[in-house]
Length: 392
Ligand code: TGC
Ligand code: FAD
Image (cartoon, rainbow, N blue to C red):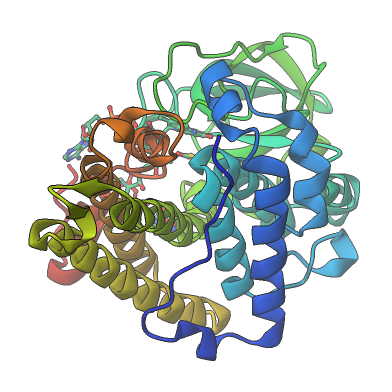
């Protein structure tokens, strides 16, 4: 593994738009990543295992629930701070960002937004430090893009409910202590339940064989007559809007995170192009290589501007779900295209784990699929601009 020389790229002076607090958060996260994660990330990806010893450190830099109020253990930061943290984590690896964004937006967010005061007090402080890790169970084997069709369900039994069904593709499931699970009640209405490891009939088998997001653990959630106290049902929201509201927050984090992956690929290719000589000069001196680099920084800059504005809108509570979809779709696609071009710029070295590009490229194949596929987000924009639903 080479020394991590990444310094960031800011072609349109976006730094001027950040507060001193934003810069401190970003720089602290960057320094932590360089010291603690960069030296081990290739091994983690090779071994297909999330490095769990990083969890307390992620809590310390504020990556778990950055915008959750301090009274619940969060950092009480704004949305741009959340975005910057996700950018710095995904600059290293999408799986690292996944762990933090699932914990923040898909576990802490629904407990904070839809949970009872008792639930918030019980779970949020431990999730904020990383003492407990959570996962989010929405997708099922037969219901991915169409989560409203889910079959996981529960029936009432005294003070408890009995939960049956299965979820698939669940990030962090193999080691999470708690799972926020979306299931239908006897009337067919979707509710969120907090299921805890150790409840009888609840298991979390690991999904093996991934060529992507290898430094993140993915698993199933199996519910075989699991008895869950009614006190664990999130009382504040029912219907598909519950999980989809969480996805808005997570997709926003991904829009920022993808810029991080793109920046790392660009940074690596730029440096390599000045060091690598062919035909008697650095390859940076060939027009075809300059075209790639110029287009990369142009696309990164456009994504940075889009995402910063989205952060302002979210800070004001004005960002629409469709705007978030557009940013997630654009930025992940942008990052994946840059990873592919950057890999070519490194020639044969581009496939080696001495450089991060191939790992980013493989990771981004998951990122372009989860939290709504590339095509689903296009249809969300299509619906928004035409008023006509083309999903069904
Ligand atoms: P539809 O009829 O449009 O909506 C049902 C209800 O939900 C409301 N709603 C939203 N609410 C909040 N935020 C949003 N973004 C919302 N979108 C819709 C809507 O108003 C309605 O409310 P109500 O009160 O009228 O019932 O639903 P649909 O069944 O037609 O589906 C729409 C569609 C396809 C856009 C949606 O289901 C979708 O987004 N599908 C993609 C599924 C997805 O993104 N899954 C992600 C799983 S989690 C994950 O991937 C984590 S990866 C983690 C990591 O490692 O980083
Ligand atoms: P499908 O829905 O079967 O889609 C297959 C193809 O059909 C796609 O190209 C899709 O765009 C297309 N398609 C579907 N419907 C339409 C339509 N109406 N019009 C046009 N095209 C359509 N889920 C969770 O709940 N929690 C997690 O933590 C989580 N983590 C994940 C981690 C990883 C590594 C991965 C890969 C996935 C994860 N997911 C998670 C699941 C993820 O959200 C789903 O994979 C995703 O929503 C797509 O569902 P699917 O894979 O079933 O594909």
